[in-house]
Image (cartoon, rainbow, N blue to C red; front, side, top):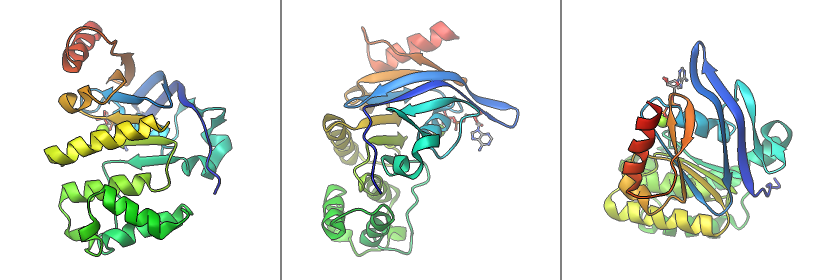
Length: 237
Ligand code: ADP
Ligand code: MG
């Protein structure tokens, strides 16, 4: 499957309702290649909904997402092949080994040199010595590391992560920060929802606050990311 090359993703007036509940209200934002965008906001604000729409796993009720010159409607499968998602649900098969999980997804995406890529992914996840163990026997943190490399196996253009630090120990969190910085430096678009301000502080290039379905920029400036986030929340309260 040919993957698409696009240099930015642009959300234009996207709204999403679930029944009568409005999860997103006319959200617009742009994320360029080479940068990490952080989505911050209270529970239920609409972060996962926005990530799922960006991932084409969910359709907007109104509005559009532009992937460079494409939209999800006109790019279809090729667009999916350019997107990597790490969500709440890790989508690992518990009865398959770590290596088998990676190989399975690699085949699904038509990844070339699959054995070499699987070995590389296991090494990046620091799971080489657990390659032949069932994923179902892994701790949350180990599964998270495996699922991250699975999501990146097809070298996606757009990387979407929903609370990726959940369950990671300090060392693993630091490695994840490095991994995401490298992805952005290599030209990927990285968008991440997290509550972990301290971890995100050194990672995100741009930050927005999602609150009650609306998106507000968190401008750079004095203070920590957490302080700047709280200031925005106060201003919009
Ligand atoms: P966040 O990720 O910021 O915590 P979500 O995007 O998960 O927020 O949720 C935004 C709002 O949409 C919440 O009010 C939530 O209850 C609602 N919501 C999310 N998913 C569904 C769904 N599948 N069905 C109904 N309501 C949903
Ligand atoms: Mg969420």
